[in-house]
Length: 473
Image (cartoon, rainbow, N blue to C red; front, side):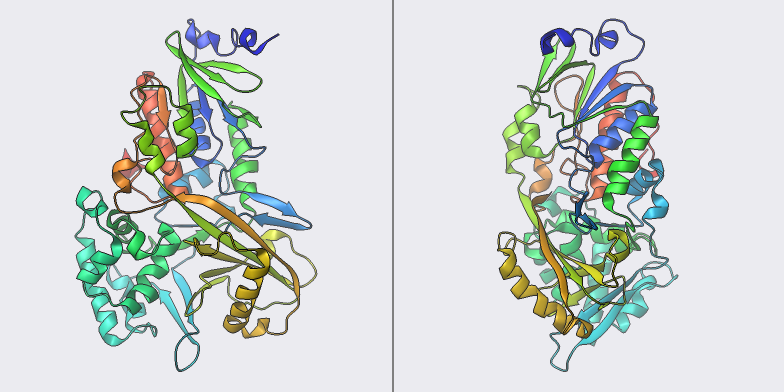
């Protein structure tokens, strides 16, 4: 039987009077899985297609010998209510807990008087007093710089991140207008901004920066408490996600790349290499370039604008020592090319008494294509400078993972390029962290986009949709 013949029965019940409509979700990252779960929970028959052999998109794990390795270190904040919903939905929240209270060790090895350790901590006081004590004692800024941070924070709290005017300027320009010195930008604003935006202040939209800082630091005391997976990401985003999809009745097909979608008989035909699926609704939950290739004519006013949404890389360095060299679960650095360092020993399954550290380098345009030998020569001495216990320690393994298109680039003006979930084509919807969620390219943005796409699809199908997030209902 040919693929064209098989298509006559795949999804035909919905198109020709069957009891349940059929939705095809293209893409098995967090956006696609979320859309599929939401549609299935509302009674829609769902097929999820993923071209890779696994789910999880750009937040996944793989095996390297005895190690289970995450492709990159991913964290989320307590204010990431959509991603927290996802963890609850796949029954994995206990595997990715959040700090009781924000506590970030910040080590400056570039200080003239020698290495200095500071901490960004919050108290239980209301906003903005929850960070006042930490800021007052933060050793990496002068007294005048600390005072200027407070004034800038009050000005930022008054902003509306959705104001289109903010999208047109860069974060550094705004910070300069509000008295922030280069040192203040380095030791505080970029410390947070690079990790969340994947861009330094001169290259970040003020609208997205305002969203990050206003939501994370100035909304409620615990908003910025940090959470991260204490197991391999694949356990959450693939294994548990598949289990949840199966329980919801979703047909999940891995190694099934959508090659073409065609409008047909009031519905859609989704073509893969081995099958044609007929559907009432299609959700494209793939990156912007792949979306552009699949979009039918007329679906967006100017589909080539998707190609104007740039990408930004993230580099991760993985170092396995023969002994314990770090006693904190993580820290971040100043005065060094090293950004954030996490202890991944327990989650990786490492045995033999060593320690496995993951070094996460955002906005890594300068390093992303460097040979492993060059990166080893550059970063191992830096880790020894930051961690005295690493001096003389044996290196059991050193390797690199590169995500050249890890996120969309949050450059000024990107907001006008990001499309919403709805297209001009009836029954066709878009999802992905790069769509118009108001958030930068995070796991939170991906899940929120899945909500939006599913909600729009269910509305068009005449189905009730109860948004999982009360504040977004």
